[in-house]
Length: 85
Image (cartoon, rainbow, N blue to C red):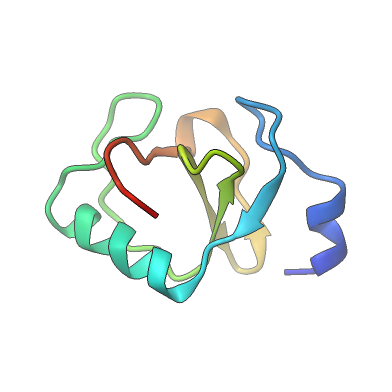
């Protein structure tokens, strides 16, 4: 993903700045996804492990990156409740 893009996009829900998730953050998130403990904002269970993602500044929402394109749709956002990142 183009680093310059991070300067112009923001979280569509909170309007906070977004940053790229680190490998350590993704490992923690993927462990929670494997345990079926994370949900998307639409209420569905987050099922797919993430290899690339963006996280909002307060670390409450995660947005997948697919084929170097951030998926900034509210219903695709994964809630990070209870995860210390």
